[in-house]
Length: 523
Image (tube, rainbow, N blue to C red; front, top):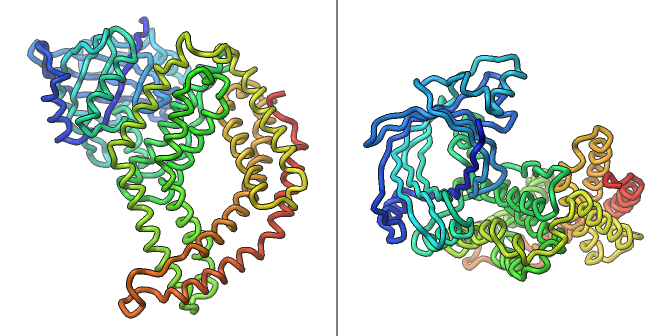
């Protein structure tokens, strides 16, 4: 069976937004239709298909033209919103999976290698789908509006989303339509396909923060393709944690949002030679940094309250000023969180994220306006980038324990870029055991340096927070903390934390030397 390519943009919304889309003038079509979908996802007890990045679905479609049953094998997605993946479809006679029809698909190969184990239902979907084919620009786009539920043994999940699938033409038109719809309807870039949501719900991961997935870059990849893979991964990481933070304000989700944003901005920097001919790269990178600046304040307060102040209170619970300080900064954190939520809930933010994925997938940098660097082998490009970053750390980190705070911060930034670069390009060095071992050793040494530099940065941040304390609008008599006691306690906390500086500086200097002694994995 020959695989087809599915290029589909998924947009999350609520029921009112879906109704607005149904009446949107850009989506009017004389060929509109409706179908009811009952789908079940299958795997082995050991999860062999999931482990191979595959999903097996059997779907019964009931509409005006009758009923049919379709069995589909889908390859996994590595990004957010845009699902460009292979799929293998076949009409089958009944509701149970047809094992013979899997023989010509990757799922058949996986099952054969696993010893032909039994497959069983994982979860089901019931969807009411309105669909309509539209023309936009020079392209044909199939628009589907889905509303329903995912049924799992852990409970049901609502489904409310729009999908734009390119059936003919230019992917740029797909994004242009999405951007036009977002001007009047608050759509958000989708992060998970329905099957992925079902699996995440079964695993209890749906409402938990998540770390970045490994980026899928193979040795045969070009540098341009490598950037696209990295950027997709960063956006997926961002959107998964954005959804969690919007739902429950989890501090770790906010931290992971910031990590995703730093990784994305670092990707723009590391791949600058690939993107140099497209000025939009700099514009997007700077706009991401500008819009998300308030996120840093919220995260700094999280670190100070939970990692610096909490241990001090545990050590000296009788000191009232520490409790006043916690109450004062707790109120400040609430204001900082409100600022973050206002950004994430805003149309400008939603539009910026969709602009990013549109530019990543269909920007001028990918066409004739791109640079020759984009066509270089990713492995050669990676070696140049990583070597340059290591050289900077070596030069700027000399006598690290004697550097001023600002100079140490620059070394920390370079170390962070090198760490992200090592993670981005890990797939290029995963095919030989020797390369994997060298990569692991290098990243471990780099992480040690980052940990010490990060702790020193937290000390500097603690000083800044203490120096920036402002008294509350009402006085202690109204139940608010005593500002004078809080400020005094902030000074004590900063002094206690500062006492660790000398040992941290020595440890950072040693970690810098140790890193330089580890053989770079890219050589």
